[in-house]
Amino acid sequence: MGTAAAALSVVSLLCWTASTAVHASHVIYPELQSLETKEVAQELRTGYHFQPPKHWINDAGPMYYKGLYHLFYQYNPKGAVWGNIIWAHSVSTDLIHWVALEPAIYPTMPFDVNGCWSGSATLLPNGVPVIMYTGIDPHKNQVQNVAYPANLSDPYLRQWVKPDYNPIISPDHGINASAFRDPTTAWYGPDGHWRLVVGTKENMRGIAVLYRSRDFKKWVKARHSLHAGLTGMWECPDFFPVAVAGGSRNHQSGVDTVELHDRVVAKEVKYVLKVSLELTRYDYYTIGTYDHDKERYTPDHAFLDNDYDLRYDYGDFYASKSFFDPTKKRRVLWGWANESDTVTDDHHKGWAGIQAIPRKIFLSRSGRQLIQWPVEEVKSLRSKHVNVSNKAVKGGEYFEITGFKSVQSDVEAAFAIRDLDKAEKFDLAWRTDAQGLCKKFNSHVKGGVGPFGLWLLASDDLEERTAVFFRVFKTNDTNYAILMCNDPTRSSYESQIYRPSFAGFVNVDIAKTKKIALRTLIDHSVVESFGAGGKTCILTRVYPRKAIGDDAHLFVFNNGESDIKVTNLHAWEMKTPTMNKLLEQ
Image (cartoon, rainbow, N blue to C red; front, side, top):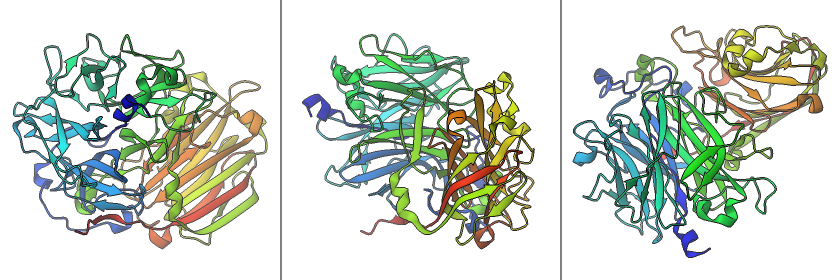
């Protein structure tokens, strides 16, 4: 590795947000900030998804330093609602077992007196990690600050200091000071300048504002943005390279941001710009090219800057951040999932928010989308195992998977379709509204080919159940559209719970294979599903009242005319890892 390469092992951290569709942005509940909880719904707490012991959590951010994965996250130390935001900090050696440390950053200076919001980190040439974060100043302006480790010999990075030359980037004329946040990972260009992006908006125009610096202290705004789109505020931007299939490198391997300026390597990579849209509360991305000289990112022709195209996840998944893992040469993605019950429920539970299982991400061979899959370390939690093979399921039939405890489990299933001719006709107008299509044709509506899949977190009488399923439609005589849904409409007796159906289309040539695979991570109140090997991902929060603990069941169902076959189904109980145990001094 050359000097420049050694200088630029760059990692990503936090980005700010406050809510999902249930809780609006910046909502503060003063009466709930410091109250002690009256009850704890332990049966709904996740077992192997990251969350602190109590209180509110949102956007997480990862980095790797001296043998440890560091996870910083937005945290309210006083209650289970948004407010009093600081940077909490946990570390792990395997992305699964976590040890809690002291808070990394909290308001102490005028430039962050009203909050320490999200940012990112870069490893400088001398091996020093630098965190850049959004601070809220006395005028409630959003400004960008830096912090450095107090002790570089401490691999835990337990203490951080803030230079007195902060803020290093302030909103100038033309920038909306109340919507100017979430600086990305920095990258180093061939001209010797560092660059990074900050999210903002101008009316309905979301903007990735580009800044450059020679010394990481003085930053100058570029004459034009890296990219922009008419989609409303761009929160939590993330910009990184991915390897192209067919090059000299393995396309499933990650690419460090260090290589953005390497012109030889650049021929074998594409670039991903991801933004979190404040208006829809979803993460969208495009894939394209980056011109170092013109400082422009251009999406490929197949990708549009809109609010209905490609997402990382078509469910409750927001404010994501990726980082390059140098130990396994992979890019890893983290995303936040809020609760979808009520604020009062969150207060009584004493906690709110989780992190999705970290996912390895890479470019598909077609170059038309990203593939996501749970990091391999998750398999270390697998314990008791059951298997079903070559079992036919006729239309209207279902059967239970027994012999293991499904409330905290990992399920991989492969389905074969007997007769595609029975697929219903697809209306091309549905292409931009998979979620609406799932709501219309939910798991209770009989179809031609599907709905088929899993009923999980189900009561024995099936009065409570969450459905994860596929439904196949025919676009013409030889082509098909595949809808994948998470349908929680019957997941709970509780009437106040927000239970939207989430859905996305799956890019699979079903006419050729007549097969499709599904992996679902089940963890008490979260259902995280991966269709067709990670081409479509959907995370859903659910809150059963009967289907909890040993009373949670798992079924395979088929509500279509065409018979299907479960060619293979493997299910494992999942052990509970160490989750935020305090570091022993």
